[in-house]
Amino acid sequence: MSRIALVEDHARIADLIVRGLHAAGIAADVFHTLESAWPALGEREYAAMIVDRGLPGGDGLSLVRRLRAAGCLTPCLMLTARDALRDRVDGLEAGADDYLPKPFAMEELVARVRALLRRAPALQPVEFAYAGLSVDPEGGCMRVGDQVATLAPAELQLMLCLVRAQGRTVRRHSLEQAAWGLTEAVTPNALDVAVHRLRRKLAAIGAGLALVNTRGQGFALEAGDVAG
Image (spheres, rainbow, N blue to C red):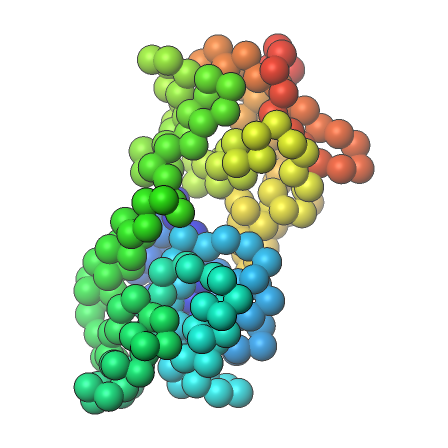
């Protein structure tokens, strides 16, 4: 499941968008203000972002300009109640990739988000690999040779994070954010349960990798027998 950032101050609209995206297999972290969105978007990588123009504290375009100036290339869909040509041009010139006026059909929003997720293959590789193990985000699975294990959405995000680290230790907090985002409530042992399941799946496909816990630091993929 892909995870995107949604910057929308209207609670009801945000909830409808989150539900529509989730039904399409896309998870979303919601931010209601420019102030809350800026540090979050700089802290972690999202597959895409949806930004409303009319936000408390200013125009959503200011957030997009700031992110682009900081080198953030995350694909962006702008939402707005304005449908004038000048407004659309302003949004694209500020660094937005697409522009959708309100009101909109949920099917169109989902289609446009999916189009953004297909962009920039150099930044969003179709497959991630490490030590003979590959993870396929679109297929929601990991494989070694012809052996395949299906991954739940949180498991997929964890494996992507671990494979990207290429054997380096990933901190527990970073893994929790990758799997459940910044706005989803997580039980204290959710990560440990997910790690246990991943260890079993790695063993089942003969990955030859151990998901190792370094106490006080985090988890890493290491060559060796997978412990249960």
